Structures are given as C-alpha cells and as structure tokens.
Length: 504
Image (tube, rainbow, N blue to C red; front, side, top):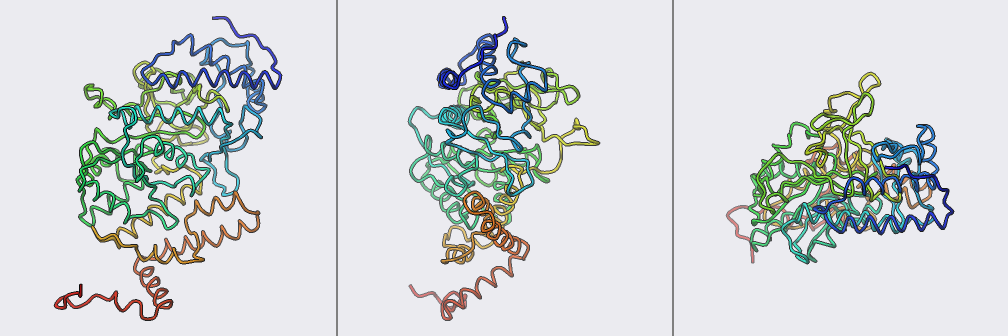
C-alpha cells in the first residue's frame, strides 16, 4: 500500500476533514460489533487520521518529530506513534480548537488535587464516544434486549450532576438514558452510598419478579457484599438480572480474587457468573471494552474463558516491555489501543495496563497494572489494589469514602426497614458540610483558588475525622447533635421493653 502524501491543511480544510472522518467512523460504529472492517480499510483511515492529527495537534506533532516519524514516512497503522497515557496528565492533547470543547473528562494517575489531566472533546468527539458507549453496552451488557427494551438500572457511582467531569459518571448516565426505565437511579449521594434506597430496590425486584441491572465500581460491590454476608442478608433477584462492574480491576482486590467476586455475586444477589460483566474503560481512548460472558450466553455460544472482544473500529496490541514491539497472542505486555473514535485526540495510546491478546488480536485481557522496579517496567503486575474509579488522589479518596459509607450504613441498616440513617439525617441539615471528596473536587473547578482551597481543606479534614473514628463514636455524636436540636425528640426513639407492645 502506498504512503499518504503530506498535504498541509488550512483551518477550514482541517475542520472539513474532521467532520468527514467523524461521519465515516460513526457509520462503522453504528454497523455494530459483528460488522467487519477490512485491514486495508482500517489502515487507510488510520493513516488519514494520522495525517490530520499531525497537522492540527501541536503536542502530537512535537511527539512525532521527536520519534522522527511523520505522515508519508509510514504505510502501516502499527507504525503510527503511540502516545503514552501519562502525556494526557501533563498536556492538553486535542486535535481541534479548544474553544469548541463541549465535554471534559478527568484522567487518572496524578497525585495532585489541583493539577489533573483532562480529555477534551468537541461536538463530533462527544457523538463518537457516546455512540461507541451505546453500541458496546448494548452488545455486551444488554445483548438479549430487542430494540427499545429497557430495565431498571441501579448505579453505585456518582451521577453527572455530582461529578460532571468524571468519565464513569457521564458514560453510565448515557447507559441509563438509552437502556434504563424512569425509576433507574444513581445511588451515590453527598452522604455516600444510599444503602436504604439500594436495599429497597433489590427487595422490590425480588417481590415483582422484574429483572434489574446493577452498574458500578468493583470495590463498592465487594464492600457491599461483605457487609451483606456479615448481616446474613441475601437476595434472590429474578432471572435475567445482571451486574456490571467497571474500572481498573487489577486482577485482585485485596484478598478477593475475581472468582471470589463472582461467587459473592451469586451468593448475595443470586446472579449467576454468566450475567456478571466487567468493563475496562480508559479516559484516553473512546471505546470501552467489555468481557463477552453474557453475550455468548445470549447468542447460544459454548462456554469459554472470558475475553474482551475488540470492536471493528479499534485494534489492541500487547507491546513488549523491553522494546515496545508487538507480541503474539498470549504473551503479556503493555496494552496499546488504536481507536478510530479518537478523532478529537490522538489515534494510538499505550497504557500502563499489562495484558495479552487472543484470537489473533480480535480479543484481549488485562492481567494487572504495570509497576516499576529499578526504573524499568516489571513483567509482573502490581499487586497493589488499584482504584476502580481511577488512580488520581481524588478518586482514591472517593472510593474510600464510598466504601466507608457502605460499612457505616450497612451496620445501621435494617432489612427490609428503609428509613433514613442517622448520617443521612445529619448531613441533610441546612448548612451541613459536603464531605464527599468528589463534591470538593468539583468546587476546585468552579471557584476561586483561595476559596476553593479553604473549602477543600475543611471538607477533607471533616472527611478524615469521620472515616478515622469508630462507628460507635459517630453514632453517639450524631445522636448528641440531634438531641441538641430537639431536646425531646430522641425519647420516642429509645427501645421500649419487649413486654410493652407499640401503639398502632
């Protein structure tokens, strides 16, 4: 195949080319995961996108020049320079005028509360990522749904209103809009996980026989299941219910393996292994990758080890940690993605996820996050539990907060009684402090630096106090505050002797 010539583009020509590429790629995506894009066609589009990005993206051009690779020098998509995902933490990697940005998502990996990488997308980029999300979710989480069918979706993650720049929140909200019924809900509020609402919804599904879908972060589910087991609380959700855990499940979660997780889902919720779906999403690339367990069941295909099929508009390779050369199927390396839906950023991104390809590159799997030993990438994955919500400090704190709220509220919850917990009542009072770190994080985005820093420090300090203290102290303190507000209000809450029946 001949190399594409280098033809400098004017701003209007670049915009026209972006629109043409967007419309063509949208057609590829809408054709679905079972369609085919020949290697030659995929290659042509990759080279076109490379030429566009080299012309309009100064950061990418500088990167390519350092690699001594430019359009016209190569004729294979595999040779297009891969951008390290860490670059997105330090630079604005956009292939369109930033004043046209309509969407921004956080990246992970930074330890700073105020210096966070962002992925910007214009209107075309927004259409691409939303369409890819809808097609992939429909194909792998709802493969048994005919067009227009919906179910109740329970989300253990923040809503876009709560975390407007969190990719997980934005993506799950799109899923709710396309596949959820009106009573679908986000179950992370400013006081943490809304345990009583979750318990009520699970019992409603049991009673009605109507299947539901649960979507959220792996760790939130693990903590919830462990709390349920301690309280000897189980559910028997109707057949057809499913659960999707998302984010960077790094092969292990503390002492809980992936198989342990599936066993807990079956034991606590009654959802079989086949209806447990894991999704891997990278903020730096538009297309999420789902495992194929539920899709194979829906299609009547025989059981096999789970993999993540790569859709026709993408390619994934495992790259050697020594020389970044492609590895054959089954050999573990750093996962690199070439995604045609990345029109507003860059085509090729190499991540810090260790994994391997299968089925001649048509599928892949992640085995863990890479770690550095002696300044070099280790061939063994990092055993440190990663945050399913992301790896920035704010996301790790958010995860800790979510899990703390589960522990606290499950300890206080009564099944099937679903009254507000003491913590919810206290934090719902006017003027109470928003102690969820993600709320604080959004304050940083919207307010003046000094004011935001003060509010952040105050809120994070309160959060630390709350999570470091034992449950008994918190319950006692909450009751003191309530008694101060209503001196006689707690008397009726004191337990009555067993022999005295409550008045109706």
